[in-house]
Each structure stands twice: as C-alpha cells, then as structure tokens.
Length: 360
Image (cartoon, rainbow, N blue to C red; front, side):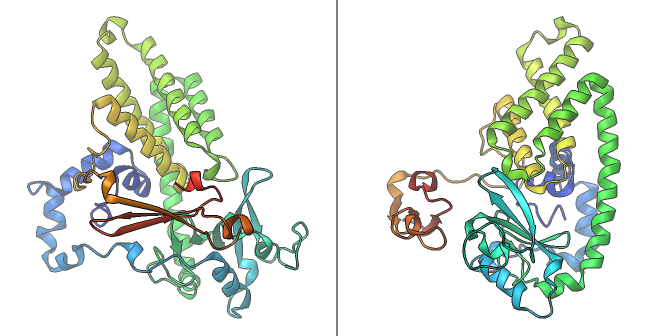
C-alpha cells in the first residue's frame, strides 16, 4: 500500500496508514534504499509481481469528471434494486453553519417547492457526500463516486459496493480495532510525557476540533490554533522536565518543537475523520518545514519531484458565466474562473461559490 501510493504527499500517506509523519518518512526511505531489507522483500523476493508495481494512471483520469450528485440521487431513487433507506446524504446547513445528515427517504417538510423528498430539495452545491450504510459512495471533496464509478471510484459501481459491503464492514471494524489499540498506546506514551493534566487539556482540544457536524467546520485558522496550543502544551511539559540551561539555544528549542510535532502527528493520524486528519497533518508538516528551514516544496516524500516555477506571463485567465444550481446569481454573472497555462495548455476551472473573488 505504501509503495503503490508513494507519489502521494507525506501527510496523505500518514493519514492513509494511521502513522505519524516521521514513521512514514522512515518507511519510504527504506523502500527507496536498494540496500534495505524492505526493498529486498518488495522487489528481489517477488520479481514475478514486479509488473504490478508500475505506475498506474492517475485515478482522476479514470473518469473524465465526477458524476453530479443529482444523477447519483436519481439512480438511488429509481433503481429498483436499491433500498432508499440504506442511503444517507450529508449536506451543509448554511443557517446552522454545520454539516448535517438526512436519510434518503426523509420527507421534505422545510424547503419550499414541489420536491417530496428532502434530499432533492437541498441545493446541489450544498451536498457534501452520500453514504451506503456506513460506507461513503459519493464525496465531492474527495472526488469519489462509487455509484457510477467515475473519478476516484475507479470503476467500482454501487452493485459492487453492495455485494462487497459485508467484507468492507468486517475489514473496517478490524482496522478500527487496530486503530483503537494504537491510539491507546500513543495516548499512554504522550500522557506519560506530558502528565495527566496537560494530556487532558490536549485531549479536550483534539475533541473540540472534531466537530460532530464534519471536518468542513474546522477552518484553517482553528487547525493552526490547535497545533499552536498543542505545541505550547509540549513546551510547558519540557520546561518542567528539562533544565532551562539546556534549552537556551534556539536551535535546540526548534529541534524539540520538531520532535513534539512528530509525536503529535502520531496522535492526529488516528483521528476518525479522514479529511480532517489529512488537513491537520498538512499543517503539521508545514510547521516542521518552517522549523527545519526547508522550503515548502522541499517535501519529505522521497519520490516527489519539485514543481516548476510558474511565470505569470504564461497564464491566461478569463471569467465566464456560471452554470448549474444557484439561480440567476450563478447563471447571469461571470463568476466562473478559467485559468490556462499557455505552454502546456493545462486548464483549471473553479465555480465552487457564487463569488468571483472566492473562486479566483
């Protein structure tokens, strides 16, 4: 799993594996060291399977675009082989400013219009994900579609999901059990290091960040503040356990902060929310890079390549009318942003909000 996803960022790998940043970095270094035992086990002892280790196409290229959620909802509604009460929809409630969840067959008692089912009355752009029982089958942020198999659904369709759900649930329960054990081990180690009172503060801070309504409620500012708070807790514990004379050197203090952040990453890597976990790990890696004096693009993922610098003269930007749900504000204003890299003709578009400035 680690080798197959070696081109992913270090925080992404840590999130996938439930391991701290330093642990994943060490494993990646071993996998790319031809003299290591890990490299020998993977390649030398299994040459017959080496063809399976070649780079696959980017998962996002397996489908040209993510299937719109309205198509997903219509499939669930009209496909006679699917039970509507097996599905739930997560959506952004802009009044409560939270991510809420509704059963697919819930009646529409709150949104004006002719739709009898609530999930069809929700504006499309506010739907975040769709779940079959406990498994996410469509996710806007993750670009996953396991109903029609587009994008990172990698061709897996809802009938396959249903057929394999029991195995998926068993594997998930086993992984959850392993994670709980690892979480207890990591928590015990951190508690021993910080002391009970400081550990309880860190624990409460971590729980408060895990908003019950979903990871989208944790803003970048909240995540940054969380990391700063955690770092201060570690520093406070150090000031008690270590003679101040030994930490007068700023470089020594920075190294201790780096060590604390790596330890924190082990705890974060076991948080239940996939997206929140990765976002926090990205911020932690950014802090580590700054403390170690590395540039942001000098990533610790060994096989990643530096990105080329972009020349603004090579970029073409234009604004066109939006499309889709959102009313006249979307369809009659030029709020859709298109950016083209002229030398490569690489094109990116954004119409996530009604605001042109936010989309830019």
